[in-house]
Length: 105
Image 1: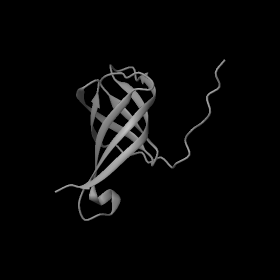
Image 2: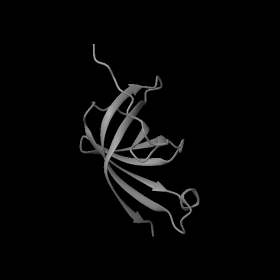
Image 3: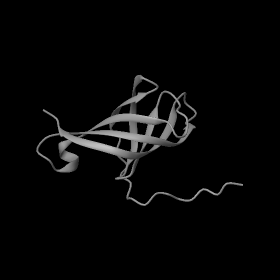
Image 4: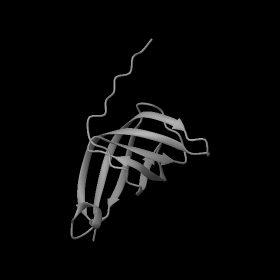
């Protein structure tokens, strides 16, 4: 029997933000459920295999982060969990492995 260790070490913020996700060479729209410095939980219209690499962009609103302009966060992540939410959608948890930040014009 495999024992799963709790890997969450960063504070999670329950932010509902639209996300553009690249999976299987196709772009999909998703919505964040929560975000931390190390990962993200997404509601998406398709499932994804554990271990799959995904790319996603989150627009962080200026008023949430205290910046003069919105900030785009471009991320590469690895899927660590995927489950059905019971409404033809999936909940995808991904560890953020790399990111870059750019100011939204």
